Image (cartoon, rainbow, N blue to C red; front, side):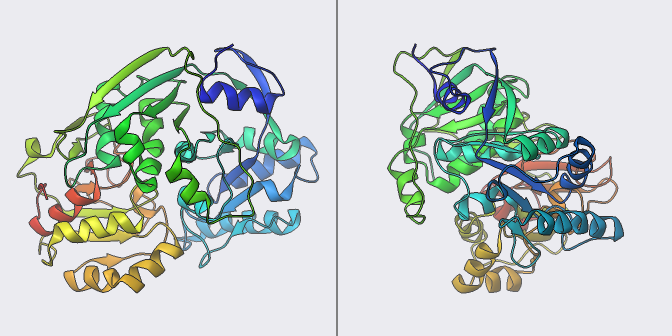
Length: 416
């Protein structure tokens, strides 16, 4: 029976030759991710289950990233619970403040995810790892407790939507723009509980950083996961982990898709999603003149070195507008070092930006840059829901790093 990537990974982990869309299965997981905001409830449930030890300490990752450095007493207590659990379980993949990063960048960079894996995490943007050809999806804290104890979970096999992207990307346009454009076409529920499989010559030419961004945003169309088939770029990324053995998975040529779309992005302008949905995507030119109080550059969605390089190029050595704030958030300590070594940390600082530690911070309206009443932000993050980033009356526009750089120096939404 011809199978998609999603079906093949799930069938392998369920010990079955094949699975059908809609089928309920139990499948063994390769990695279980938890963060400071989701682990404490899971620990409580884990205890109530009567569990004593996790199924495999090497297959759980515990990451301090959402409210760190601890913004208040409650945040400190959340981290403490996870810290103590990691010590009790003798978990080798516990990432402490100062040695951490945002989970969705950290796990691939640490070699904790590989093509063909089945990964679950108590964070909705766990779908990021599909860029490596893994089936990765978000779960709730209760399910995470079960996965810790049993090493497996139940899944309903999703059907797959094939999204073919063709054409050479114009300058300044990247994975974020493709993602916003596709979400705009599909809608926030257009891929509800389905897998989004991205293919086409544009995707094959897209660097890994862009693929991570693309799959990170799959959930914003309601998708269970986003997927890109492994290729030479995947192999080059995985070459930094020679100790890992991995088996790439590809969709069969005769595999059936629930829907198929083709988008030519040869003339795609940088995209901006208006409040209050990522699907409200329009070309940047449609929003010229919208005043912006704060720009956030970074996050798990656009916090790689390549993103900061693009933003700096768009700024062209100019200063941040006097009526605008620029908050720069590297996605990991590795990226922080790259900013320092490349001179970009100095470039942004001299331009009038503030550089924060690797944290989810302003993306979730937690800290490190909360919007006040009626303020407007342009963020390279993944969501712009009502009140997510600060006061309920504030408004956030989503864009890629090039638009963020141009906007920071112009003080209004601008094309690079």
